[in-house]
View 1 (cartoon, rainbow, N blue to C red):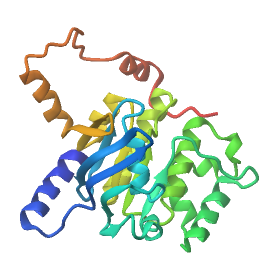
View 2 (tube, rainbow, N blue to C red; view 1 turned 90 degrees about the horizontal axis):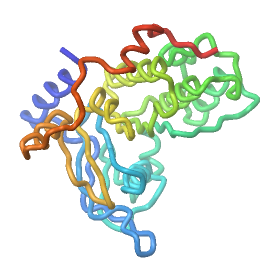
View 3 (spheres, rainbow, N blue to C red; view 1 turned 135 degrees about the vertical axis):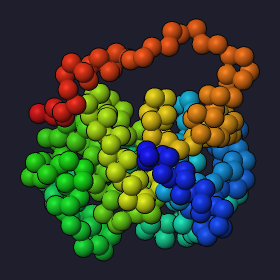
View 4 (tube, rainbow, N blue to C red; view 1 turned 90 degrees about the vertical axis):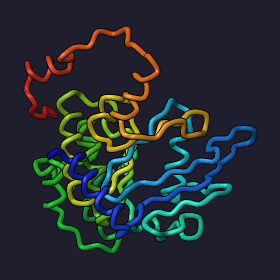
Length: 271
């Protein structure tokens, strides 16, 4: 049974029993910037333990929506609950139960990787097992390196390591594989699956549709501030095919990325 199948089965059982509700609940969320409706009456929920994707073109409203859930931006109206906490009323408390990985992160130049993780643990008031986190994100051999000495993939994994120090219930990942090579991207997918396997709920933004299909239990597709579709990746494809859609592209059993991985291996190369 795959990770997504396991989550869907467990979620279905939980929903049937009514034992647990969604970990994120959003209703009628709105945010305007002048004449622009960045978030326009958005409603959705995220089940506990799933990977939920927010997809959409640039300017669709997905980043603003997620920043509201993170307590970084205040909605004009509507409600948003994360872990049962009202984000508008208590954004500080919400921050204590979430982890955030940003697409572009900057850390202290004169702290090592291990020192950075320890520092963030102290900021959260958490006693952190630095070695365990380094092992989880595959940075053990870079524990003494400074941020500027890391590769792009290592910087992304350090950002995730820092997001793990407070043992979050929900993690927000903002385009975690942008600019990574195929090996680093697939290792990031495996890391995300491992984190989800510990029971953490993950909200993911990505422009890579293959990534969304690989990782997400469900995806919400946004455009012009609204959610235009929300379902499993497979169900969304089936709905499109039911309209009579026929792809003009040839369906292949392998991709150029598969060729690349087959020829060069799966080992990370980050020297």
